[in-house]
Length: 203
Image (tube, rainbow, N blue to C red; front, side):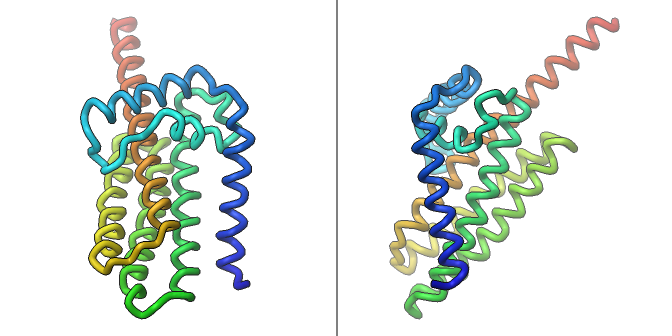
């Protein structure tokens, strides 16, 4: 077994174990609130990203990080983006492994997906840096991820390449776009509200 295959299998096992262990832990009130609101917004305004984040999926995804249980809104936003980065890196490792064991007809779409996920990782990493430097830049970076996911999906569809593992990875990435954007927007509103309150107090 090559090293990239070993990394992918190990990460998949760890994710499965984490989701199973967290399934028995009640989510915090903040996580419940966030995931409920995300599901409502997605159902009300349609699948902007091509994906509607379900409550249970949202909760299970965030609870993969044990810090979620006691996180405030700022930490939860960081956790969401960090999990998105981890997911994007796992997708990159998966695609690299697939490229070493694929047919010639699947090579081009996989190479295009690999390029997309290298860039997706960069967008999420920039978004994480932006959480301390400027929230608007973070949302801008995350918004750019959707186009890159669509490029990968279109390449797979165009070439009739059906790889369930990669389809699931694209689904996972879209989910974290929705969760991260919601949390960062909520954090922006929180900061704006605090600034407005402080201005009135000082006045």
